[in-house]
Image (tube, rainbow, N blue to C red):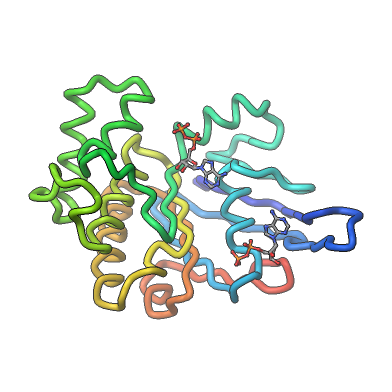
Length: 223
Ligand code: ADP
Ligand code: ADP
């Protein structure tokens, strides 16, 4: 039961211009429910491009993106946006939390946007924070949290609407090794608890070794 299928993805930037660059040349990949896949490649290899295409934030020049078996490349922009909001959670290197809202509110807001009643959204935010050891930080604003705590809140926010797929771009890239470990452990336990499919770009080979599988990117392809 594949959650994400990338099939022959090709992507080039600035076609026809002197600055033309071909980043993806037939990249293919499948991530199953409950599977945690590491995406390892040197900087500039195209990891962010691949994650943006997988996350329906950008489109490929050729190839197909399937979410739970459904071909997303055939959908309208509006339907793709709906699918992204319902099915995909993102974590970035920087937390991108809203500074004027508390940790819990940052996790409540995407649920309200999805039509979840406030009390239920708050319950879920508390449950998620609890599961990453941040129950006592629910009422803190991001500025009052450490880097590792901020990033754990960002992981909870990505899971707020119970997506099928988690995409993360160097989620611990900005943290020291000990903190990075704590954040990764939180991410790992949430993925294991929820049966989510996860694709996580990382430079950290120790973290990659703790995932189910490592996919390497070279010359625009995945191996
Ligand atoms: P990574 O995440 O592995 O560092 P990226 O996907 O960010 O790699 O970038 C891959 C290549 O594509 C790089 O050469 C980068 O300069 C180029 N690139 C990325 N985004 C754009 C863009 N919007 N326009 C032109 N070139 C881009
Ligand atoms: P919202 O429901 O708040 O309008 P969007 O549909 O715009 O959210 O975005 C959904 C997810 O995609 C969010 O996690 C957001 O951070 C991320 N996102 C949106 N646009 C971009 C972009 N251009 N580059 C990277 N991530 C993006």
